[in-house]
Length: 478
Ligand code: FAD
Ligand code: SF4
Ligand code: SF4
Image (cartoon, rainbow, N blue to C red; front, top):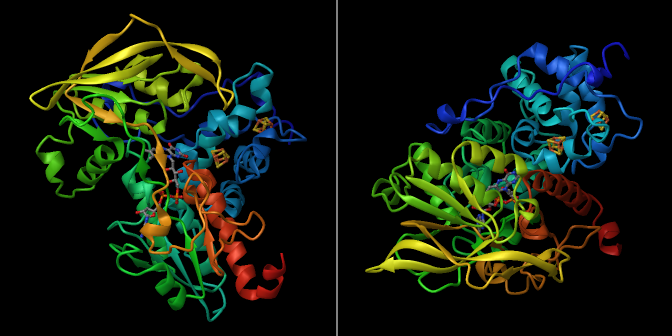
């Protein structure tokens, strides 16, 4: 083994080739090319096969990373793929969009010793893309019929991961989603330059081929109440994500040209999928030729600035009230955005949207400095008096994060218990809400988070539902 592994002292870390900023800024295709076989094997061989693999500990799914890296280095690709998919319902999606610098790769031991981290995410993506190409991804085969059905509200990664597992266990599964396509934020939030849509659609198609029923354009709360779903199914999973966008509360924020991030991204994603999107066609939700200011510093803000670049914006500026080191978005995404020409105004908070005749023309921002830590332990931004500046903007995108919608009202389920943040309360052992047989998973249970956590929650919820449906007395006693 040793001769094939531990190559981190002689082999440099390399990622798959990245397309040049000039080329990729003109289209919506993913920015990384595929690893060629030899490169994936070579990069996997850099792993030092740690006795205590911190990469695995810091992967929310506890993927068996060292073993599938070793198999990849040895050329045992199908086995490596089988091992990687045993713990992850969407390895090729995580390989593309997990913030690896904060998860598995950020904890890689060889990075601590001064050699670049193993490119875990790129190898994971390579293995599963290869598996799809080679036909190693097996059809979903339903388990022995359990004679029971589960209704899942929400076709995002949490709902889809639960659906897959429950179907494998032999349940009849119906997934309800208010959108016309399955995938949740994978399809309508995250832009295709990070995650091409056919990668998502082949996953949902596999579920449909395996007998998972999709009821799309179906809004629970409007088309049926939660109670009606509880009567139809033996158990229900709430996996509705979080969609109430935080507002920009400054003078002028009601001007035309000020828009929520998700409206902007959904329009762009829909247009990319070939839909007729009037607000996109009219230019209302299109950045071409415009000065764009995006307010916020998370993944959503990064997706907006990079979408605006690709739509041919005249200028793209990101305003964030803390500094680069304290921003919530992935450092890797910021680097991509900078290469693509985005201007970052760190330590800048909007004070007003400027306008003429009700149309936005710019943003006045206060310059900030970081002061003492606030209640959350993060350095609190403080205004520097007299240092305001203005940025031209006829499109201002609000990317300040998301909170849960009012779910008891939205699902017409007034008895559903929610936390003071609006997330659905679920017992931490049984994952069940206060309503018997109703479970919760993903962002709606943990607050806005990551795809990999939604997958983990969905898988756990499926196991919890199975336990509830097969051993109800034991679950009730817990
Ligand atoms: P969602 O993906 O939000 O899916 C919920 C689904 O429920 C939706 O399809 C919705 O239509 C449906 N729904 C809601 N209410 C109802 C109802 N009443 N009836 C029927 N259906 C309903 N994470 C990463 O790991 N990496 C990234 O790069 C990344 N980028 C992001 C970029 C953006 C712009 C955003 C907004 C988020 C990003 N995230 C990223 C976060 C990630 O997308 C979420 O954490 C993840 O999608 C949550 O999964 P979920 O299944 O809980 O919810
Ligand atoms: Fe890393 Fe995400 Fe893959 Fe886990 S799922 S190994 S965190 S890329
Ligand atoms: Fe390999 Fe890094 Fe994981 Fe160690 S921490 S097993 S070197 S990938």
